[in-house]
Length: 157
Image (cartoon, rainbow, N blue to C red; front, top):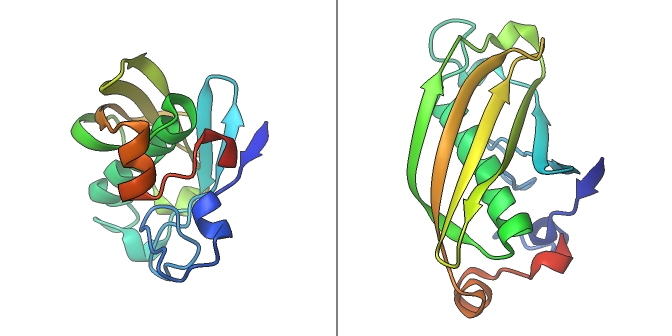
């Protein structure tokens, strides 16, 4: 398993405040990513401050985790950036904050020049599938990704 470099964090810019992956965002998720074969994975420790019901990780945070991991699949596997055009989530069981670290993972299901479909999963500490999503991304051209969205290219990861 190889750690994926976060090239946006390497820049040192405090303007980089992504809620999902910036180490500069004090209230963000601060995700880090690893390459594991066809999957991009992240391990993450739920925080009590992100509960919905007592001891249950808020569903919106779960959706954010699934969308963020899908985005990193787009950047590292599709070699561009894009925007989420749709996300179909199935919440299968509660993610209990007290049970500790969870795993989010995702892989490319289909990819073309303009659309990518990513399958993402959120696994509890015990490895049980808690939520899954099919995330459809509209992909930008390499030029637009670089100029407008500061995409550093796949080799930067």
